[in-house]
Image (cartoon, rainbow, N blue to C red):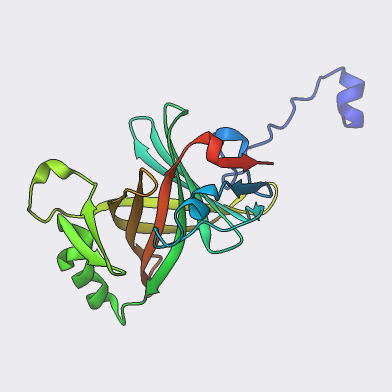
Length: 223
């Protein structure tokens, strides 16, 4: 308070503290957070060695980065990127957990230019065909299976990436993605293949193949 305010008995109006536009504006599921750790139960791999294309990493994994995808109508994807080229994805509806998936980055391809990237998004069977062959396996489309045998366009969405503590908005990218799966009879589970053409522009393009599994809360330990 200034001398004049004290003299006149005026009460100063507090200056509002505006929220950081780069800070998280939503809650994170399951107690997950940047700087936390995740461990996967890998018992399934010893039960059926070699049955899956990729294994989720061993040991406790740090979470250096978090990605948020707002799908609209209360649906969201929360991606917790881990130390060893993997990520844990939690799908929520109205802040309730709907699904948990763990993925390992299997391969990244870099289109040489913007036109090659567009051609992949618009024409590649890997972003829309009812079934594809990849990594020596046959995969069936999960996304919008009501379309029959016709190729469908990829699902497009934006992801906001956060890093640091406290979390700060650090990057943005656009995905053109398709989800595939295949049965693993030895485990009584499905293995998942997420293919995403990623535009982080203006001249940064990649196509990422991530292989993973559907998980339950019993399959992960969060600290």
